[in-house]
Amino acid sequence: MAIPARGIVWMLRRVHFIDSHTAGEPTRTIVAGLPDLGTQCVADRRRRLVQQQDAFRHLVLAEPRGSEILVGALLIDDLPDTQDTGVVFFNNVGPLHMCGHGTIGVAVTLAYLGRIDSGRHTIQTSVGPVQFELSDDLHTVRLQNVPSYRLAHDVAVTLDDGQTILGDVAWGGNWFFLTEHNDHPLTMPNVDALTIHCQQIKAALQRQGISGDQGREIDHIELFQSVGTSAGRNFVLCPGGQFDRSPCGTGTSAKVACLAADGQLKPGQKWRQQSVTGTWFEASYEAADHGQVIPTIQGDAWITADGTLLFDTDDPLAADARW
Ligand code: PYC
Image 1 (tube, rainbow, N blue to C red):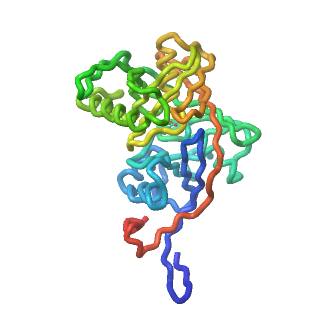
Image 2: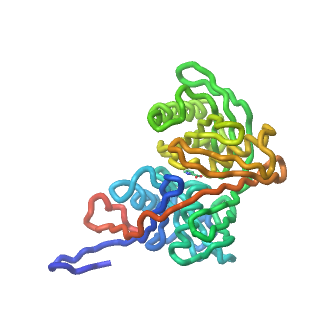
Image 3: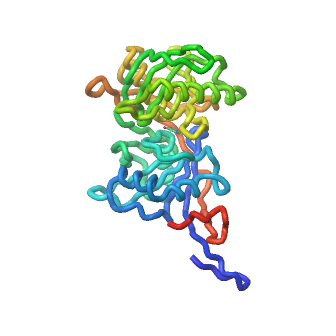
């Protein structure tokens, strides 16, 4: 769009966004100004975002307009064969499949925009429909995640310092390696050491060829410790090297799937998951076919900003803004 001011014509692209945080973890929901991602399902639009519009993903999320810790959510209003809103989640290095804290943030954002009221709704993600219930105060969201499961138990991983640790591989909407093994308490002063430990685990998984189903990369590492019998604290390292400030919805789903597989959590029993920052989600599950579980995750989100990102066509740091 061209805006004349003091004789200068400002050539600006505009992208409308709403920021929120869910238990401390930010979500940037992109509402308008999206690139053309075709007219097909969410998985196809996600593929096009990666293959054709990666500059958009980077420019709306990263510095200087954002931050590496943001998770993005593109809203899609014109899915074929459904009135549901579609969402493509992404982060500082690429697309995500599901995102639990992001779904809670998107739900509250849709309410802020006046597009939904309290009650039950469904969003479409690249890995299937996700139902959620929004409370009357429009802040608390209980979502029913995609079917989750533990793929492998007590997998031995040898780190580059020679020590071997055990952990589980589980799917909760993203692939996780979950382990209790860490030398530091899961607290904020230790986040640098915890990050390095998780990066070493991720490198070892790749070296040893340990993956999710069908060779899918395990791109989230979850360290956990118990807090009594029905609660836990975690530290989740995300694919782009940032740690989740929230208890991580998909990570909590993966954890619940492991607890269910170990017989330590019964269907309907409540599990409380605390993040390294001290915030909480509540979770439970229903049993599903083939030993899988359907996790329910509950958390709160709050709107933090409603704005317009500007991309000046002369800005050297926006040179790729050509969508
Ligand atoms: O809440 O599922 C989640 C999530 C994934 C990455 C960051 N948050």
